[in-house]
Length: 460
Image (cartoon, rainbow, N blue to C red; front, side, top):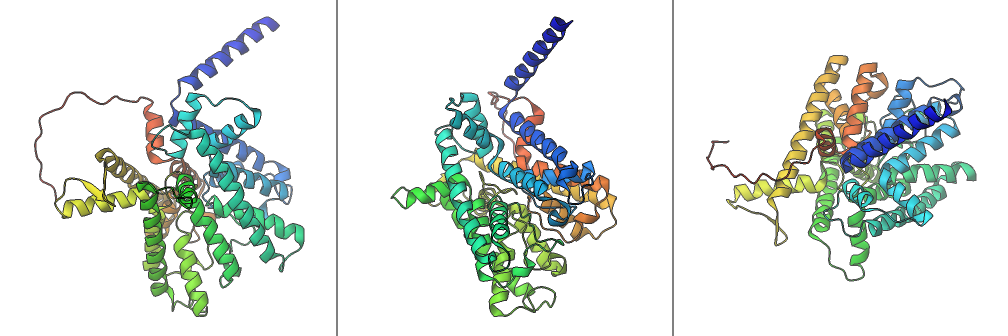
């Protein structure tokens, strides 16, 4: 009997390993994120994870775990009021692993054990990091870990130094670490309770600048940060890095100006703040929709025009290979450059005296259309579950897709079906709509050698 059980176990193990080895890199990433979310949800349902010792309902735990792993920040229960220290640490670890990525953490373990990283694992890292080539994947992971430890460590110390005036030493250090990780990973989950986020520090220059700096660095993408560091030693920036840096700077600058002009006299947001506070508030709210989720003013009290503008920023999101979501800054820039080329009557998409390959333009178009379709479908589905105004539902769906975490107050009042829809949207937004589509398809089609006759159609 024992031998039969052992034989079945061995056969099951061989079948499982065969399925894993046959899976594509996209499928491995999707499965890894899903497994981590499930483990996190089970841990958060434990009585020890709650302050009152009562088990958290599984759906709420699954929502929280998905939000943490997908570094979104939408919460149906307040993190401070609901979870014990154990539960908060579980969430912190989920944010860190979710932000860096499953394969980054796996590679770290391989490096610590002195094991060689296989070609298959390098392919998965390339997919996870959204890199153009396979060269230097292990080197990139080392740089990612170094940048993460350096930036998060510095941010934690700076925040702890400021909060030492408001709370005791152990607590200020813990809060510094938690919020530095949450900001760098663009999660936006906080520990201040009452769904208030960072509203208590709306005019605090120190907290505003540290948090936004962490968000920006985390949202640039690890390859871009590495290039910027190397550029100081004389290395030339790639086209990707230059395009990401320029697009990010323009979005932040334009976002700050637009939000300031729309909200400067709003008595429920920037109105009560002084001149410096209004500038800080506008700047912070321009940075945080880029997938971070923190806020220093009430998003629900903003004017409809501002909320719609934030939807656009959330949809664009951060940059490729970063901890953020959205269609990505380089995708948005590529589409704008393609439109400019069409208007000017040019065949090629050009920028900085370089030509962007057409397959990249097609990929940017595909990602944008899949993402737009996902947001539209989820908005319609959420509208069925609750009788809320369209803008708040659109805002919620876009926030989930962009892994942002901002809300107009709809999240805590979601129906069970609404929670499931937001969970699915957060998951798709984190792993990437194109990656999800590839994983479901399961087959990589080779380029078709047959070319059909060309024929024009009328558009526009």
